[in-house]
Length: 486
Image (cartoon, rainbow, N blue to C red; front, side, top):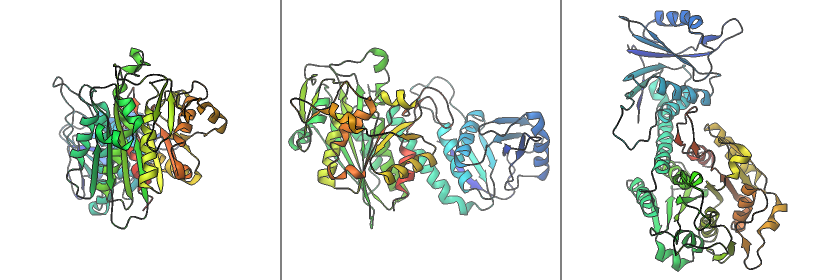
């Protein structure tokens, strides 16, 4: 990960970046006032270059200008758009990609650099992310970035928060990108244990199949029963002294999804290593809450299973008894995520009794049908909870849209032989899945939110701070939201 430091004074960098914003009708782009670069003539030269560079100032525009024999010898002009946090985040990611062959760059920031600094730092760190399992090919060489500000100490906490947020997002990306030949429930639990090992204020419990059977986690055992690599339930708890609010986060953790007996076609199966992105996000957010010292208790539950085809796999038509006693009829073993989430949510309500319950899951393909590739679907009956989550997600540079919990679809959950039908073929898929989960919220029904984030958990292209592959969606938004609850 890039080394980013705050600097001030008379630095003389080899590569200097000056931010540019849109100007008026007669001036397509203008320089943003910043902490003074190495010499006033550099700004004058940059201003003279703007018309020739044909910059509009849009976020993410980058131009390089060579200055042989001068200092700095490379001058970069960086579009930062309107200058809000997300524009700076996009700019940082674009710069990280454009300057990948540099060793060190210095970026001049505005005197009031708080919002700009956080967005820029997150963009640099996330935009330069790569996940590769090969030694072939040269890796990007950009190793260090200096941020030129008037008072470095005044912005140290902002940079630390940005770095922690990016590090936790990268952890979620790494976990999600890891191939399922390596990644299985026990492996995932081991990664959480390793990440939490250095913090005495984090408490970890991992339930193995024997404990899951003894305690009645029927959904998790059914889904994981077809694999030679048994299921796990990770429970990670951050308990800061004096916390007045307790939040439980639940994340779907299917480490690979064949669809089970209701097997997926190959094109739909090839990226199913990402089906644990919800678990990765909530684990990373809890680790981030601890690293940032957020004054809210956070308990994460990650039900982990591999949904495989074998003689011990659960069958379409099976009746599953979930934690707490509710039964469900499953006629489609490819609707497995809601079965493991139901167990974890019922356990949270019955045993942990939190103030708020939020689950994240790569739950349905219907999420992308309804909202496209970059928005999660948010469901909640609590207007304040929904508004708070949406505001935090937006501020963090992620996207979600509130969807209805349509009661006229509840009838589709009726079963002749069980309490619920978990996989009805009627109704809007994402909505019906959310309604099924709602049945396991008990007294927390009005303090629960569900995020169906299958679509934004993976990016097929480079866009802003996203690169191809896992996005780590949810980590940034959850950390912003948790930070508002202290």
